[in-house]
Image (cartoon, rainbow, N blue to C red; front, side, top):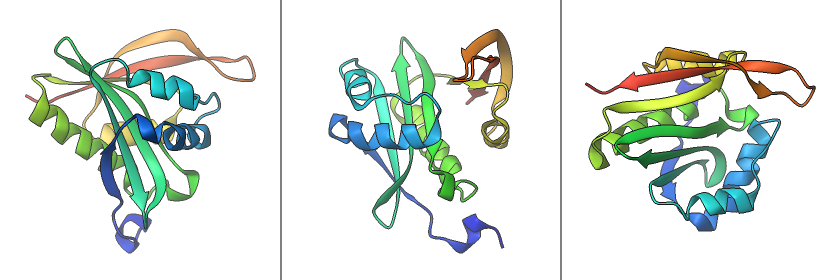
Length: 158
């Protein structure tokens, strides 16, 4: 049995600006260059933002930030605490977002960008039906100064 089969599926809820500090903390645990609570709070001031929070026994363990603009839907960031990775939380967040996009927008699919060296994320996105549609050379700069390509991926709903 894998971790996803042995634990209760995370609760996924849509959250608002009042959760910016929690979202920022999860982002900091997931990425080398974290977004501040103020930066995340400011995202809510622009129409079209959706924020999802995954909790396990009421403890935050993952998040997803996306936006819907001009008929397009885009994942801005998704992260799961290291201890919860491989448990199905990331897929649960994506599944919930896919349902919301279909239900609330006319977007034909979802776009995202991911660092080309982020193998766990690439595996998750492939499993969720995303395909690579582009590449930006040397797009991300790591804290050690090394540049990494960005892969643009898309999942169509048609």
